[in-house]
Image (cartoon, rainbow, N blue to C red; front, side, top):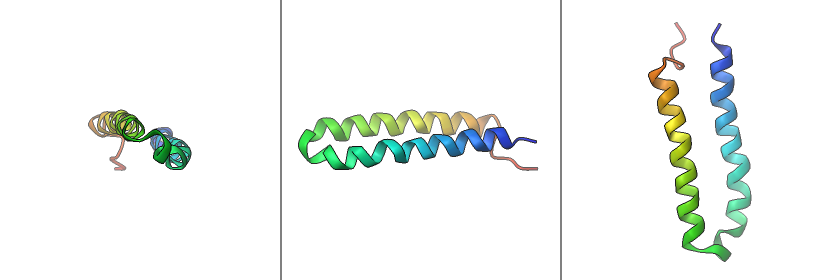
Length: 61
């Protein structure tokens, strides 16, 4: 089965939420730097999703 790939993709998005919660609390204090930093983080996660997609991780058949 390919459940390990689904688990890794789930963990990637779960970790995204773990890092976004504290970011929301301090974004007003840090300003534009915090927004840029979060977009860099989200871009790295998107690279991981695109890689998993190209490897066929989302095909369940």
